[in-house]
Image (cartoon, rainbow, N blue to C red; front, top):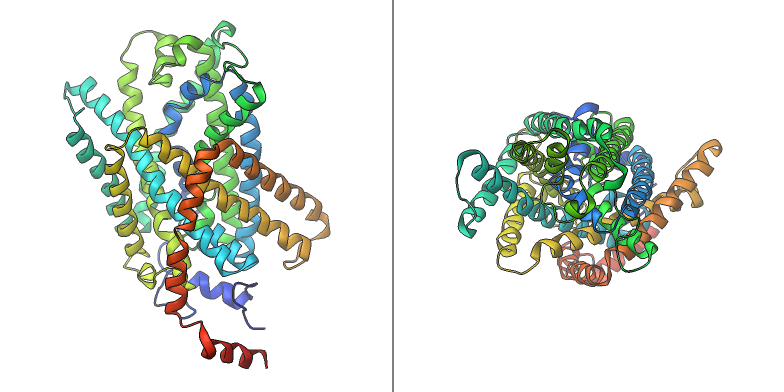
Length: 478
């Protein structure tokens, strides 16, 4: 059976991708790997960035209906995690959503998924860096009396914060995984403390109205859900870095589900604790809701500095994990001739160094630009939300395609359950696109269309056009 263009992969073809063979000059599948604990830390570290430290204040503007939105998005995210696990078991190769879309629907949808996620990764890193700089500035003033609020100082701080994770990734997968594990533990400790201890200080009067907006509660829950979805961005991390994971057929699904469950517990409990300990009118305008929650529990004002320190650790950990994904997605697409071949270049330690460097350069440019544009931070987040959902949608569709057509074998016992999960994940992604808003959808679509010239370029460079290509295809059909 010959592997057709964009069609189902044979077992040998999957193995080729997982080992970096099949005509590439890489050793992607060789070298150090991430164990289950490190793979789970990658998922958790990428989901939990700096956003969680501000999220309760953003959600308070919608009222306690946002807690309901949190619950719904959590269920949708868990459905996606299971779907990624099922897909990763069938195609344990780097690229995640890109590999699934290409295998199911062909090259062009695969390319669009790779392009969309690549935008998400480097543009989202710029958004993380902007928030991260704010915490560094706050901590420097609170702890040492330093004034780093000037634009020049913030740009320098942000660039340092972007290139430290890049250097850690370039040092090798083992060092990257260790750094990710340590930062994940450190970021979880204070957040879970507030989430658990804060429940004993909850007062019902602090929660505020169910719907704090002027519109309907249905509209409020949709917008709040879109914000929550960005907080869950990263659930696909283990599937994208599949070749860096030990025993990917088993550990991709386990890491995805375990990581999402851990974040769900942290998010849900933390949001309820903050809502219940900080008065609603104060929480809406808060710039450090977790610090305000601790202050409300124990009194004093020094906790803001402590939480800022942990937010800095959380942000640098998220940048470390996402820097890996910035390189993994284009590397997987480049092997199939859908991204420039330079992205397949590897160095010692199983590192796709070109993708790391190029991605960090693009992130740095986007980060610097953010200081020259009004509301650029919000624009980055909304754009990243849309470009995140597109690969999620195609992944859920790929799972449905395989189950409905029988293209991939599935036991009758689990068929109904798997189809239900895939359908829920697909409908969930449609709802999230709606919640992102028309501006984000419009801008995101333009960004996707901007990738078409790149696709034309790499496709043409393979020589797959004209009479020679037609003759080659006819020869294979004979």
